[in-house]
Image (cartoon, rainbow, N blue to C red; front, side, top):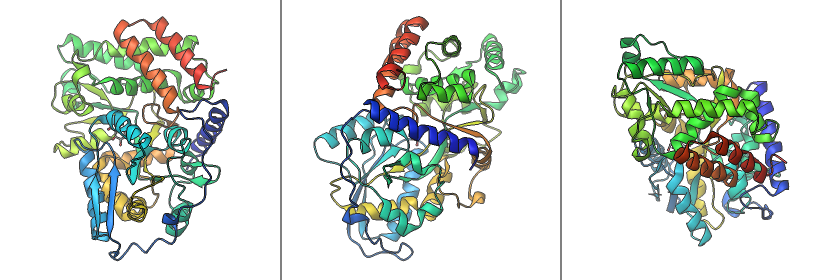
Length: 443
Ligand code: GAL
């Protein structure tokens, strides 16, 4: 793992501690005592089918194209190893978990947790579920399964607090991917853009030729676009500084980034608000739009649609972010008060296993969190993502829970909603300054 990633992750841990200290987290109560639950003790070997009975309710937002198929592949591994445990798929539809997380919050509030749920490594996990004492530490499981030897050691701080590890990462996704339609670009004599200015020039040309330049979907996909434009305009150091208070949200540089963002939005389809991420990314592979900015779960979807890499779709780092990997990681947790903790631990063992991750990731469009997966199982795009993950500068995603806790992210998203309605960059920037301030990161 490269040194820059280590530096970034240490920074995130420090930022997380600072936020907790400042009361910037979504929940400010002290985490509960961290005694290891009985459920995490002495896990059984996972090779032979185990005899445990019971049922495990697994909560996620993987219902749609590409996503459900990945989960099903991991479920099949689980069912072959634990034939007597019933797998209850409690997925709630809606990209990026916008609906699912609201349903989950209600369930947690009413004391009705699923056994295990999907949570993003980073501030989402630490600032919400750990801070709210809603998930159990998994140190014993890590030890029993030998995971500390196979999970990237730099990911561990993002799922840990006070020496306790709280989730099992199943993957690494890349957020800053520009998907494009190779034929539309070639037909219009447009090169794949590297910089933001090249991107705007390309989109001007495409628009003049009657081609829809950019495909966008519902609001969270616009937050996703925003984080990539912030990164592409500011560069990785200043982008990281947004989250630890060292980059001023009120600066002229951020102003330029927001103007770039407004320009990018001007090339988007007018019906974006009513499209899912799948609808929007499908416009590109169907030849109805030239570009889409989306995480690499889109690749899982393209493959499910039978589309061919480098023919039906091409990819590049989002403009201005070549050499930077803006990452996120899906992980699964053990609920405090899980109805069937033994079954939940059995599920977590599969989620953290080589077999589980090798079944899940090539379909999901992500690379393994584990460092020992067989590269040859993965397609061309994901092999390139593996290379980039090991050589690029790594920064964290906002939309997918790494860099800001839920309350800060919600405030940014509220400001974005107003901006999408009124288009006023001054007000948007002022609201982002205020959001940083109330998060505790910018005092
Ligand atoms: C992300 C999640 C990905 C993918 C995406 C779209 O938040 O980490 O695995 O599901 O949302 O739904």
